[in-house]
Amino acid sequence: MAIQILMPALSPTMEEGTLAKWLVKEGDTVASGDVLAEIETDKATMEFEAVDEGIVGKILVAERTEGVKVNDPIAVLLEEGESADAIDAASSAPAGASSAAAEPAAAKNATEPRDEPAGSSAPAPAAPQGADGKRIFASPLARRIARDRGLDLAQVTGSGPRGRIVKADVEAAKPGAAAPALAPETAKAAAAAASAPAGPDAAQVLKMYAERAFEEVALDKMRKTVAKRLTEAKQTVPHFYLRRDIQLDALLAFRSQINTQLADRGVKLSVNDFVIKACALALQQVPTANAVWAGDRILQFDASDIAVAVAIDGGLITPVILDADSKTMSAISAAMVDLATRARDRKLAPHEYVGGSFTVSNLGMFGVDSFDAIINPPHGAILAVGAGVKKPVVTEDGEVGVATVMRVTLSVDHRVIDGALGAQVLDAIKSNLEAPMMMLA
Image 1 (tube, rainbow, N blue to C red):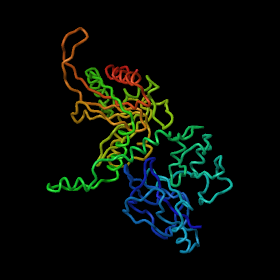
Image 2: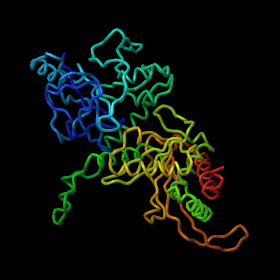
Image 3: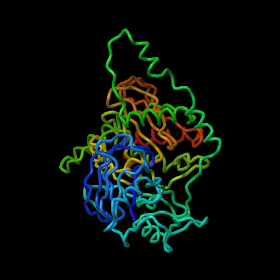
């Protein structure tokens, strides 16, 4: 039976992608786990693997094709001995009538272990089913991990083609945890925001500047996604802002001392590394704030997973440092260097930039004194970090002195964190940064 290969969803927010390069050609025999193609998303270029085995009968989407929608057919896989008639039938069938799902590969030619051969999407007696009797589509590896962890696949939302559950979905799920539904009022607000006027259209703007010389710059996928998500965030998330000045002199002296001691190991801690640690510990000190908005509920987390805004060509990305509260300073520094480097090369895997409950955005390194950051949904808050600047201050004994002062602004989602709770978080961040040795205790 001919099988459609569908455009995979390589991240939870992916709606379309560019088929950058085919790594197979028509007539090639592929097995489960073989890398089929490279797909460009708005965040990265990734490879994806075949789940089923067969012969590549027809490639439906050419290389460098942009705007290929998730779940659109991109190729047809044939079984041994099938004819071109099967290709025509599969090509004309609705997307999902029969499909070979594909999962992202972390590196070229990387494969994942599977405990059973992958088959077609035709229902099988052993396939897991939901309460409604419908088959639950999941990759063999996802089924095995779910079985080992005691997860009910009916409670897991799939991010693969046609909602297929893949490895990342079951690894992110908790036993008994169902995917939250979008609250009706939230859905209405989002729909209203989407239909609201977005300002003058292209024709109107071009007319306004018809007498001036200019160059048109096309929007790439990343810039379109950034524009869409931040517009939605600013329109639908009830922001409020809290500001504090933080004295950095103790931190700068401590950092200089510890960097001297770590020099032989090639480790150099940045101020931003300390900010990440301070935020992670603050979320442990005020655990109610370690949370995200999930439509009709709030999810509170045990560990502090901190996202960090990284500027790259054409936009920004927020890789996530997992368990930042329990990591050493040198481990945070190494993780940040690695993630930032691969982010700029667009080599991050989706699980490395999806998640977290709190974001750090630092423009102080660019000389910005202070700014207000837009929350990165579904996070509960984002900390905007300004530059450390020498300023006159009044000391504890009432004398006038000079200190290095950094202005920070905490943007907070009022649905998740109330004013007093946000103030507690910001106070904890300030205390951690002004007494840096305590963060290592």
